[in-house]
Length: 390
Image 1 (cartoon, rainbow, N blue to C red):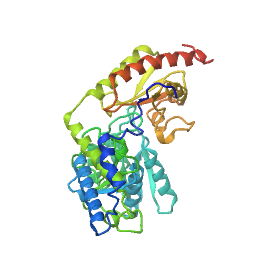
Image 2 (spheres, helix red, strand yellow):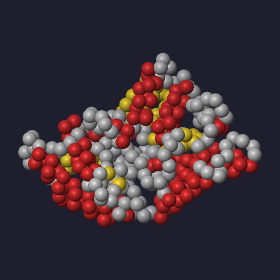
Image 3 (tube, rainbow, N blue to C red):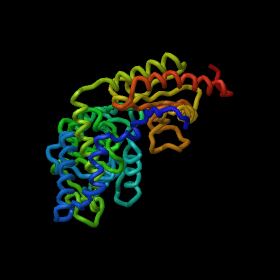
Image 4 (cartoon, helix red, strand yellow):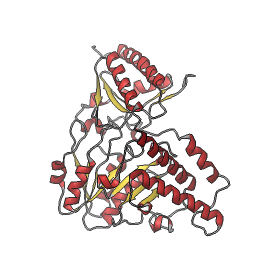
C-alpha cells in the first residue's frame, strides 16, 4: 500500500461504520455490559436497548411488528435459516432459486439436496441483465415446491429484480417466498408489505453498521423452526447470548439509513454515472454489466477486454484504491464470476471484470482520481500482454 489516502470503493463488500454507530456501541462494550436475558437492572437496560434496535430495524423495512425481526450473525445465517426452516417445516421439499444468487443461498440449496431430507433445487436462468420473468418462475413451480428464494438485487452487477411481481406468483401458488435483500436494505426504500415477501434477509455491515450482525424478517404466521438450540433467545428460535453492542449498532445504522433514504439524495447515483462516463471515454473496449437504470445506487460493474480483473485490482490497490474483481465471498477463486457467466458473458471476458461500489461517504475528488488512474493502468497492462491486439 502506498502512502496515498485510501479511496474505498468496495462498499458492496462492507461499509465504513458510521461515527454515530460506533459512539452508541461503545457503552455496551464497557459499562453497559449486562446480559439482556437476566432480570436485574443491568440486564434490563441491555434488553431495552435490544428492543429499541429491533423496532428501528422493523421501521427500516416496513415490518408490521418488531416481533417479526429475528437477529442473526449476518445475511449468510439469515439466508441459511430461511431456506432450512422452510424445508423442515413442510413436506414440500422442492426449492426454487436463481442462478445469480449469493453463495449463501446457492450452497444452502446444494446442501439441502445432500442431507437426505428430499430437498431438490431448481436454479432459474436469468436474462442479460439478471432479470427473471413471472412466466419463468410460474413454470418452475411444482406441487411439492416448499420455498422460492430470489434476491432483491444482485451483489455483483447491482440489478434490482422485480420481487413484487415474483412474490405475487408465489402467493398465487401458495408457496413461501424469501428474498435476500442484503444489498438493498439501507440503500433504497424496502417495504416488506409492498414487496409481498414472507421472509427477508438483511445485514448491518452493508449500511454502515457493524459486522457480525444481521436479521431475518419473518412475516407473522409464517412457520419458523429454531436454527440454533440451547437457549430462549430470539423468542426461542435462536439460542445464544445476544450480541448487544452489534445489535445496538445495527439499530442506529437502520435509523440513519431510513433518514438518508427519505431525503432522496441522488449524489451517489450521479457520482456513479460520472465514474462510468469517465471510464468509458478513456478506456477502449469497456462495457457495463447489469441494468443501467434498475440498479443499486453506487454499484458499477464493468468488463475490460484483454486484462485480468485481479491484475487491475492489485495495481489499483498500489495506488490506494480499493475495488473488487467479483463478490468478496469468492475472492481468491480462479473461476470467473458465476453471475457474469449467468448473464451470458464468455469466461474469458468475465475474467476482466471490476466492481466499483460507492457510498454516501464517497467524494467527487475520489471519483476524479479513479478516472485518471485506471486508464493508465489498463494501457500499461495491455502493453505488457502478449495477446492484446488493440
